[in-house]
Image (cartoon, rainbow, N blue to C red):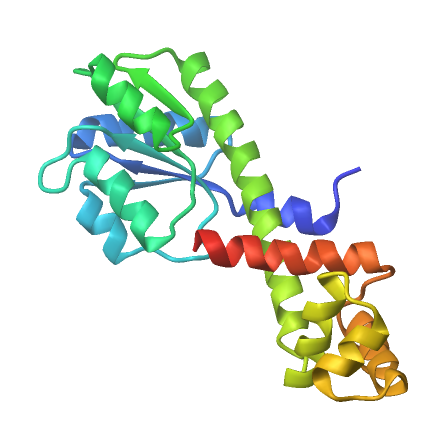
Amino acid sequence: MTSKSETQARTSEAVFIVDDDASICEGLCNLLESVGIRAECYSSAETILENWSESNAGCMLLDARLPGMSGVEFQEQMQKLGIGMPVIFMTAHGDIPMVRKVMKAGAVEFLTKPFQKEELLHAIDHAFAFDRERRKAEETFNSIKARMDTLTTREREVMERVTAGLLNKQIAGELNLSEITVKLYRRQVMDKMHAGSLADLVKLNERVKAASRTS
């Protein structure tokens, strides 16, 4: 059963088309809107960057060869700016090295013009599903990070040692606290992090650490 939040997320999804050929943009917009998919058109990578919002959801349909910043260069810029929206590349003049490069960088599909309607819609459906999972993971991480930000310095010190496997007695010795005080801090950490067990707390802590290492 689809939740209300999932329904709202899907209705806000769009395909962001970036192509300097106005006739192609118009044709793609009309096609997508005819099947109930919202579409926005941009003539260059620079234009969409100027109008970009972090709340955008869906996927990007990107021409590989654009005037100014090329589609391939734009994909690299997206990675630098932390824009994780999935990209479908399209071009009439693709080559194997280009395909390999953009797919290795995370593109979900590479379409050669002219492509079939079914081929495009299948790629978009896949990209939308990918983006839903990406945004869901980001929402979960942000929730964990927000909980972690409520911890005091002492609570963080205790959490780091608890998740490292130290016993209360060892933590008390390192932080010059009584075991009773360590137990109190430990319970406060568990409550604030909404962790039902030590294993849960370890997973939450590792998730934040992993994200920090890759950012």
